[in-house]
Length: 364
Image (cartoon, rainbow, N blue to C red; front, side):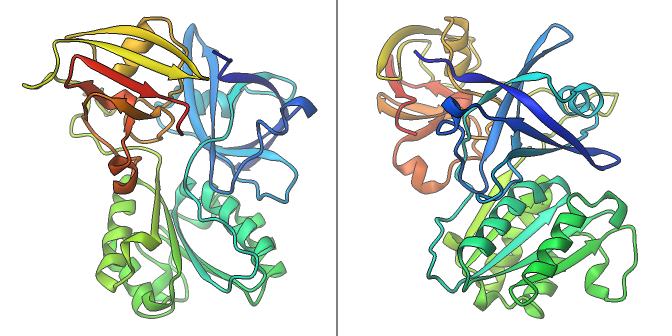
């Protein structure tokens, strides 16, 4: 099986806000095809930090015509990887990087005249910026409307780059900032990005009936409320595309940190199973025993190098196709209903229901 990760040298680190940086990577000529990306995709980074082998996924913020591979990284409270990147990563350092992944995009149609709408909150602007830049450059008859929520202007990621885009595409890009901690001239521009606020936009300046595709990325609750607002306004479900960076968990520690995900065995789970893993055309059989959190954990324990990142059912990096047998997923925030119907599962959330299961990572 081939290596999932490739060493990439950090080309530049640019401060963006007091809590965020933009990291650019050098891509060697022999890896340019590997790291060719589609707008809206993400990179999974891997690094040993204080003795921990950590992986985290960060969205690409470059457009397809920028000629660069860049990600935006905002500090997360308690986030070991994001804080390390902001405080310690330097140009010239090497980071292990997985090839781009993700399905948060709609194929570009050069001759299309479509209205794309982005609804972003905080660092959720990162993949939407990639989509916006690419749509404006490659669909010259299309237009883009961005509704972008932040606490205040000072904490707004990519504000100068977005203003530059606005100046370049004055008739095709409409920008609406929403600040929770600052008042603006327009009532629409102040408040929290909840169902009511987004509904106001859909009833006034961004009519729901004129939306061809909507891209939503932000805090967990904002994503859900934006989706609810659009569905209530009549935007068809298939036109709403959501990228999630995290999940809302019910428990928290006394220090205010989110509690760990607890995997529980349920009646009907196989107590033991033989799992065949297919990757790069090769097959490897492993044992799954009761008490292992997931098929992904069983594969890792057996020494298999399989793709994963968040292990929370959010990013979709561990996606594989069920070829044989039956499994259940504990949670799923990454696959849409069509993918599930086609047999795709998140291996980090998958428990075998039958004694034999075959999963293919080659059918992505």
